[in-house]
Amino acid sequence: MVATDHRSSAWFVSPDALIVVDRAGTIVDANDEASRLFRTDDLIGTSVDHYVPDDQSAAHPNRRDSFHDAPRRRSMGAGNRLSLKRADGTVVPVHIALSPMPDSRVLAVIRDINDIVVVEERLTEALRRRILVEDHERIARDLHDRIIQQLFALGMNLQAALPTANENNDQRVSEAVDTLDDIIRAIRDVIFDVRRAQPDDDSLRSRIIGVSAGFISSLGFEPSIELRGSLEALPTRLEDHLLAVVREGLANVARHANASSATVELLAGDDTVSVRVTDNGRGLPETLDRNSGHANLLARARLAGGSFRVKSRTDGGTLLKWHAPRKAPDWDAID
Image (cartoon, rainbow, N blue to C red; front, top):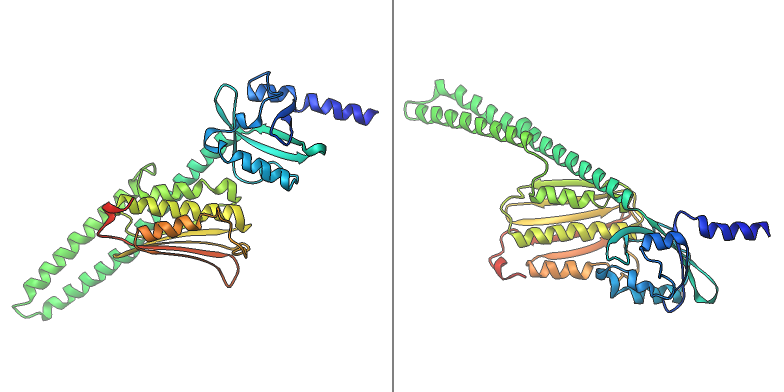
């Protein structure tokens, strides 16, 4: 009897919203915390579909039916980030745990995680800024340690050749040395500008870092990012494709790979641009999920005149590679 009383009391004192939903999606019971979270006292008798955000409402009945067809416990935080539309129309991020009950009913435990999301967003933004600053420093370091030093050595060699240059060539050598000095000064100015640059720009580099950082909470780790080559002056539609590839690649890692590390590599060459997303997870499943997004990436590659492939790696995990020409003559015709 005491245990029964405790279970009964838990329904009323739970800090989380508790609702019971039948097979048809009708809410048949709800605790007081549910009324506060949903911002209505009229939950019982209404359909749970009314409280699904508009952008997810069309798919929710099928998902609900799929759960009832194969009921199983689902803990909080499992799957993608979920949202709840309150009775007043506001949307709040939530975690939802599901537990099958007798008579095809389901107990849903719903927790408001808005405060957690705000903290995560701040951490993600701070991480994005840190990654971008580190990337700027790497570019500046490479310019200084490699390019400037090579140009300086070339200038020294040219100056050493001056005493032996004939009358026709010594002027050319002197002019070449002066040109190298100008180049070195220009590169040093670039280094200064890179190190001074603010990390809140809207460049493709910054946006890729932002997209990658946004997956940290769902991945459970920080993905590695490697950006090489010139990302400037790319067609806008190509930039959109590249961002979509990075987003879909990391989303697949988060959903399916069960990985502990992942790397996003973007190489912008003179003629082509490629994206590689690798992980150390379980590799490709025998049957690909129709919602994996691979068909979308293949369609994007065809539109861009490029190629797409995904395969299991021999040393474990998955490799996703998307490749396209940097300057397609018909970009304006690509939707």
